[in-house]
Length: 172
Image (cartoon, rainbow, N blue to C red):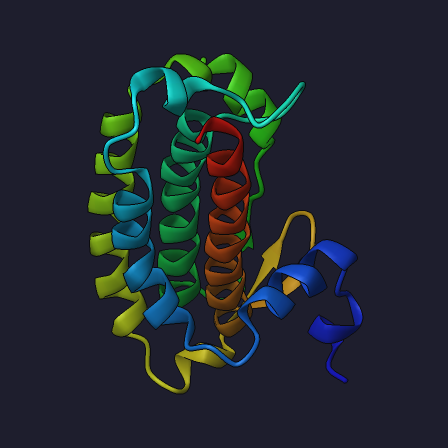
């Protein structure tokens, strides 16, 4: 077990388990299309209906994914160009409230997510086998390799796809 594995929290383990043996880049490449298909034809009201009390709507999930894409892309660029860079986390609850994500334009959020994802895929696909071992220091999780960061981003996609499936059952 590596030092990185020893520091694995339940959230990290669950996120990585969602990915399993799947190719993280393939999952990340398919996510924008999966979302567009899953949400096609939904009304604005359906997109803004939360899953339940104190739960997110599809619009909020889309805004969160767009925000996360900024973070994933920044971390990947740092990991690939700096020696042991700091990898800053962020408070998703504060961002959700401060930037009024419940009232965001869901179509714009999906468009931003999709565009950023395409741009980030260029970066992730450029990584060499040696790059996968590069390590940064995540502010919340400690040492994190490029490989772990990539797998976390991909598992995060699957976590929110699962969330969207639950919300879709609620909003019909």
